[in-house]
Amino acid sequence: MSMHTIRVFKRFERVWHWSQVALIFTLVFTGFRIHGVYELIDFGDAVTVHTWASILLMALWVFAIFWLFTTGQWRHYIPTAENFITVARFYAYGIFKGEHHPYRKTYRHKHNPLQALTYLMVKIVIFPAVWISGIAYLLISFGQGDLLGPIGLGLIALVHIIAAIAVVMFIIAHVYLLTTGHSFIDHIKPMITGYDEVELTDEELAYLRADEPDVLKKSG
Image (cartoon, rainbow, N blue to C red; front, side, top):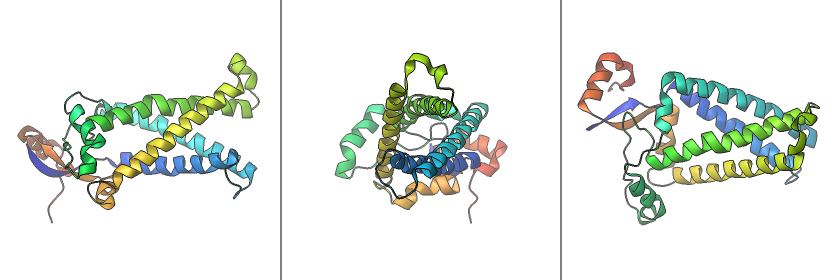
């Protein structure tokens, strides 16, 4: 294994990430207004912006799911048992003692096991909860509340709020981890440029040089 700088994050992946960031922050900001946490903007405007941002985010998720499965990138979100305990120990204990991160990105696994598990849970549990409860809210706002029958607005609201709080907690943890280890810029740079250092086997390096040379960063 040897270290090489390659394009880890595809263009769509970077656009997806930053678009998702903008839309989620818009939803959190307007969501707090809808629940009366502040009154900086009009309630009706907050509802309108929140609704449109949610529709755009759901459309983005549809495209992202299609992209993940057609490109095979979904494999990066499948956690493995290898090094899981070591990485978990680092985040629970070693990170506070200044230890070096025990995991290095590889060509086939750009997320460490704990990251992969977290992202997987966000994608298959938290986001769907936001998505489904949000669609239920939209149905109610469009006068189709009778379709929800015995579920009731109270349960829908509870699920939506719990899922939203989980998203906020994920964001806080995500931003916090960006301030640990390397500099903040070093952490977010790969999601801007697409390039990062990963470990490659001789076979992977030979494959990239022969079939995907544009993935390898050119020196100079």
